[in-house]
Structure formats: C-alpha cells, structure tokens
Length: 151
Ligand code: ZN
Image 1: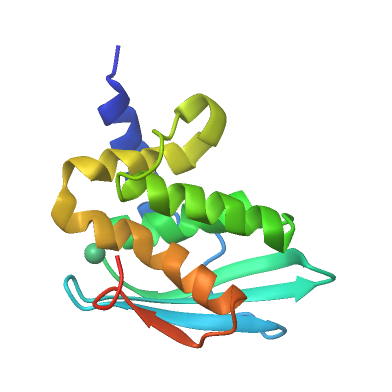
Image 2 (image 1 turned 180 degrees about the vertical axis):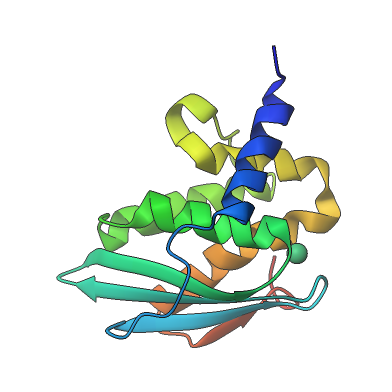
C-alpha cells in the first residue's frame, strides 16, 4: 500500500507533468500576477467571472513543480464555483497550509489535499500558496501579489 505521502507526491507530479487549464485567456475579466522570489516562481492567474460565478480559470507562468501543480489543482477545483465559494476554498487552503486551519483530506478535498503534503517542506510552502494568493488578489481587484510581503 502506498502511503498518503506517496499519493500526495504522485498527484503533484502528475499535475506538474500535465497541467490543467494552462495558457492564456482572451476573454478574462480579472487577472493577477503572483511572484515568489524565494524560488523564482511566477504565475499569472486569469479568470472569467460573470454574475459572481467563475466561468473559466486559467494560469500561465513558470515555476517549480509545486507551484505549477498547485495552480493546476486550483483551476480544476474552482471552475464553475461562485466567487464566494472559491474564496472560502482558498482561505481554507491557505489557513491549512499556514498551520492555522485543519488538515486537508483526500476524501473531501480531492487533489487539493496533496498540497498539504508540502507542509513537510516549509521552505516550499510559498510555492504551494502562490497561485492561491494570486487568485485572491485577482478576485479583490489587486493586480499582483508577492510572497515576500505575505505568506
Ligand atoms: Zn517554487
């Protein structure tokens, strides 16, 4: 039996290899750039929001496997959700990764749970949170965010 850690790692590697919703979006309504100077990750999150619902969500940029997988997992989890629900998921993920929230579980959180495995590597946490910070920046009308000033 593979351990949960193995499963988490497998999910991250798979998303890194085959990122979902990667690329530009011509009709995006909001977007934001995220920058993690610690690792050199750069991610741009693009959303098409209509009537408070996320109709489409994509990302571009370059970064390490964790930052890319995290963005890929995020797009898959949030497309079709209301802005309010997306914000709830996002703050739950960020709180969890920062040790202020509960654990993320594979059964209830799906691929998102794999990010919880990154907690074992504190130096890489900002790689995992980058896309989510960029998402929150985009949804709150900020054009960019850097992990240097937040967590
Ligand atoms: Zn990184």
